[in-house]
Structures are given as C-alpha cells and as structure tokens.
Length: 129
Image (cartoon, rainbow, N blue to C red; front, top):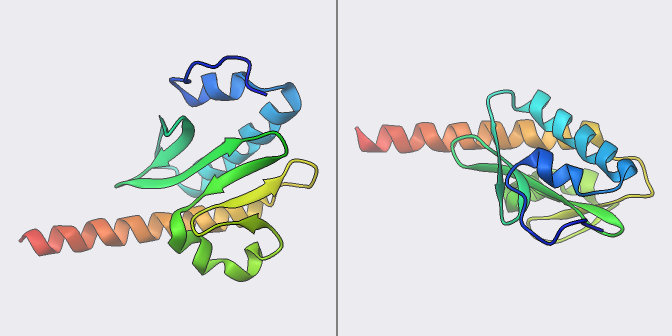
C-alpha cells in the first residue's frame, strides 16, 4: 500500500504515502491523539507515526486491512473490555479499515497513557532527590 519503500521522516510524509481514503483515517487518528495529548511531540519510531511525552505514548500504522494502534501493554490492559471487539496482542490492537474508527476510545487510551507517563516521570524525579 505504501507508495515508497523508504522510511518516512515525518508523520506528514508517512500519511502522504497512502491512498486518500486511508490518509483521511490516519489524519483523524492523528488529530484525536493531538487533542488527547496536546503537549506530546510527533516523531517516527519503528517506521511508524509516534507520539512521545516523557517517553513513548502511542504508535499507529496503516496496513492492508487495518490500522495498528500500539499503546503499550498497560494501555491495552486498562481498556481490555472496550477493545475486546478487536483483534490484537499484548501491546497492540487492530482496527479494521472497513469499520468506523473508535476515535473516542483512542482518545481515552491516549489520555490514560499521558497520565501514566507523567506519573512515571514524576516518580523518577522524586527518586533522584
């Protein structure tokens, strides 16, 4: 599906490599993550769009039939019930491209991950003193 085998350097480049219908979905996910984590930074890690805030928050990527969403195992575990309708693994979930994206759920997961990362960073700061 990607138009170029080279690794993207920005999320804009990454999204531009997909057909318009998939670009639209990826932009909606990106906007949802930005709203849930306004202080997060955008980058590319593991060849995937990534948002970071005191460490990795979430990654996402487009595939042939789904969007992969990677909020680490704690993000999956916390929302296990809501995510039970989707295939996934320990730290990932697959949202099918032929179904509506659960943007509200993605936002909730990102907000959870923001709190988690900020709490971890604060705990690390206290240990150093």
